[in-house]
Amino acid sequence: MISTEARNRATAQWKEIMEKDFDIGYVAGVDEPSPEYRTAAASEYAAYQLGQINRKLDRIIAALGSSN
Image (cartoon, rainbow, N blue to C red):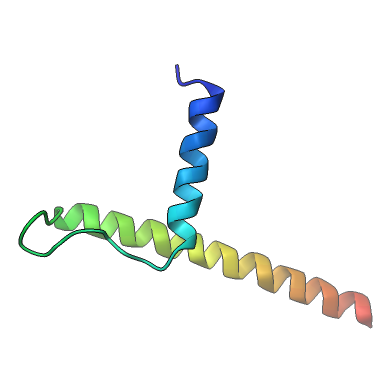
C-alpha cells in the first residue's frame, strides 16, 4: 500500500506537470514513446485543462447570477 506522503508527493508532481504547457518530453527518433503513450498523455492533459476551464466558467456564471 502506498503511504499518504508518497501519494501526496505523486499528486503534487502530477498537478505541476498538468499546469505547465503541454510537453510530451521526448526527442523524436531518440527516446520516442509509443503512440499509445503519447495519445494517453495528450488526452489526460486535455481533460485536466478542460476541467480547469469548466471550474472558471462555473465561478463566472455564479458571479453573474449573484449580481442580478
